[in-house]
Length: 232
Image (cartoon, rainbow, N blue to C red):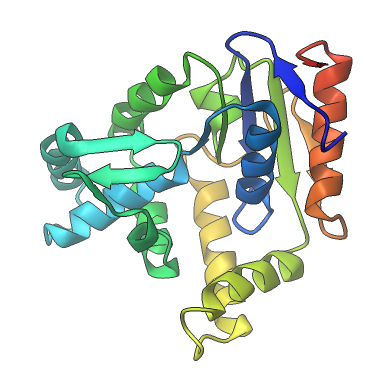
């Protein structure tokens, strides 16, 4: 399947959900490349929100304060397929750190913050995209033509995250990453507003022992069977 030339139907929206380390971001990029669709990482929006709130020195436990910061900074933010730009500067690499991921998880449970960012996500998805996150199929794009839920064992997810982060932080242990992953899972699954869960109709793929190309092949096969993409 990978390597063929594919044409997606007009406005095709593919929702890719799953916990941290499940491989959804990597898989989404490959699927987007195969189909010529923009890949949108919604997690970056929440990382941006937490990052900006911290930079403004507001209490992350104060929803109103976080919301006020977002109203001030969102007009200067551009969310593109290649990442997040703020005041014309690419800040994507700054948002990828594990510390910023923790900030994102803290602000993501606020209903008003999620409502504010929801419009941003839906607007950019109108012309078609592969969008990955934690509530894409359930909340952001409930009418997406294709929904997938990626998962993997907690041990494997921790290993993947450690491999990513260890490049920048040689002192980081896999035990630290595993502990932070467990805490983040608890917050994401347990929050009252848009918790992490498998959307109705979403196809679950356990990527624990699968290569990226195998996962991508499976997704492309599903899309082809549903006549959402056609080989050209």
